[in-house]
Image (cartoon, rainbow, N blue to C red):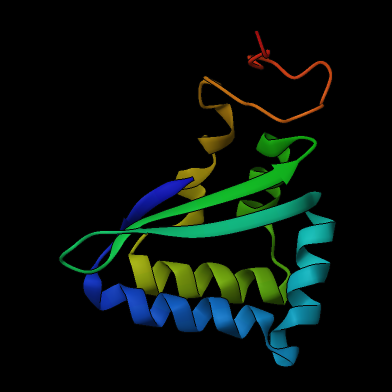
Length: 123
């Protein structure tokens, strides 16, 4: 998933991510991700010279579409809190991202992994 982060949104977003790592939210976050079938999550900010940038979020799950549907349809307190914070901060509902798991797969590479689609081979 990717979206624009304005210069004004950058610091509040960083605080939200920090809050997920703090003891007060970390257990809830981990339970949420496990319940949704997410095995890995990575978040980047690709900065712009003028501030802000592009948020890039990588979720690893066995069924990405089911995971996104689960997040959108969840009424678990943590998931509702998280969705509300994202809506307030970025002005979008996670329901708009429900089709993100159906994007076109273009390229991947992992060293030493057999069966990876579109894997480059050493010549």
